[in-house]
Length: 348
Image (cartoon, rainbow, N blue to C red):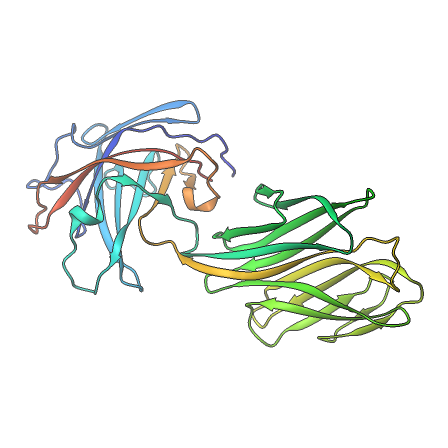
């Protein structure tokens, strides 16, 4: 369910501590004024308070495989499963720490803005470049997530898993317009992308090879030459009957069953009246998103769960820790932090 326009304008306080902490508990029960959420959810006011209508605050932490601590605070009714009308906020540490090391809560949960974490722990930056046999007068990139650009070289950070689509529209001098599209696959461990590299030859002959990013060998190729013929060779050569332009496509499946696909317009026989178009792709880097990040989860009245990491955040989304102060110790004598946060987020 796509909850567009789901906006939370909140001034709320949540407690995070270094050990799992469950309420109620006689010696650590908090006053209801300490923890609350005031929010607007799809235009509807939401007011949740600890101690009112059986609401309590739960906090815990976990230590990820790459030594980053993740702190979680949840405001929900006591002893419910599932828990309608509940809010959970998860914050990551600023630095790596060895297992069992002391966590400095005042540094991990300090004031300031934080990024919204994507569904993956890493983003993969892919650079796209437009190509044509004629001078490009204008172009447009369009991604299936709604992102667009008119830059000749376009870079994007992919943080959502699954199949992604990148479309390129090229206009050249003389009024030629073509559209090509690539499909890439993003997983936890890599990004799998490809593009076509044509090699013009004599007598209406063309050679083709695919440039690959990521994926797991062996690879299985299917080429479509645009005149009804196909090939399963990795680097095929094809002879066309007539000169002109042909839509060429390659579909590549890796050993894990992931698919990348590239389309291009190939000009055969040095036909100067035809327009070629193609995009090249290159891996421009990987970025770890676990530092200084946040995830938000809201459960509505019907127990439908909506998350911030299920969708790319639009312009205007933000998360800020307005205040972070020392708070009472928990039942194990470990320090906690009382946080005042505000945010505007799109959940799906």
